[in-house]
Length: 266
Length: 277
Image (tube, rainbow over all chains, first blue to last red):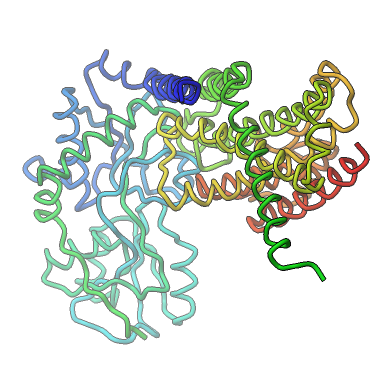
């Protein structure tokens, strides 16, 4: 009995030692942020409803990150980058580790995103959605304005879907161009990321719906630099707190008007 | 015709003996300080020191520029490989007990017992494999540290794969031990097997699955790609990666198939040689 107790004691000691090793900080990212006293965030100039540019209602991502910064006890510094989402190749956005610690304003959890970045926990779901002045059931033959500024959603999959429906595609540069095109009748409908589609529909009293399930839905996330594990842990902890105290739900309710679910679009 | 009662009691003797030999191996491992220290020093050195040391070289500096093709951090990437390393060392080295038992006469005593050679070998291999799985589990304790989220399903899947790997490798250890007459010789020979097996198993560097065969042979020299692709441990580590971080470089079923076949073949080989002891 004594021998068994000694054996198990030795094993327990090893388990405790390994668990203690787990407390060692694996990098200096959190320490560096605390030293500067600021959480630097790279965002597009505008990507409603995630980043609006309106100081009274700055957007979902800005408000969530502000709550996270407050929880950590640092200031949030925004670094606006007008190239985000504009170019297909993110290398051309010119964002470096020195610019910011967090990338926000339309990042989704995909293998493509994970090839370049680590990601925070998901806080909302999105996908491709259609927006139009009135409900539609057929998209075949329509002229569609497509806005794909969000990073990581599968544009090839969308392109394949639209081609299979024999539509005329016009690429839009920003949400204003999409709105103007639909309002003027130059475009029959618009296709873009779901939260943006919902926001446009709510603002203009239009109709918006998710494209059918064959187009995959994705989780919205914040991008973090790979290897910044201590900072990621802190942000995850902060986001959990923001979620548990109801702040996250309140922010999402203020902004998000999700498009309708649609299964019979032809 | 043999009486069913006698048959049953013979079976009970074999099972009892199997349990006794298994328990002996497990208990002995608890008392072997060197093996326990090895079990914790490897994860600490490989995950904490090497993983953190190399992490800055694999982290992102410019968004859109790929330094490391795998959609995980370097720490996450090597984590399943370190589990395999701990199993590899422990499995092969637990077979040293075959030499130990031979040297100190315990094996002779067991061989004259009513236990069959197969039962004796199975008891030793299962004991060694159990200890190796336990050493693999020690690495799992660092999952939170390397930012790998474990669920019960993931852990169960990993445990199954770890058990298959440990069984095959302990059998390999016995095959080696059957050819070696001294402790020193076994140490040198096992290291000559363990380290090349580990380093050529895509454990510390990935073969990017997005690349074609031709592209892979441009990134790495062909001889290295061939070594990695021909190494059975590559597929075992790949399966563990699939289970723990959801990343596979090869067909995930290949790992299970190769570990299963290796386990059967190596155990059969070990048994063939053990019968001649």
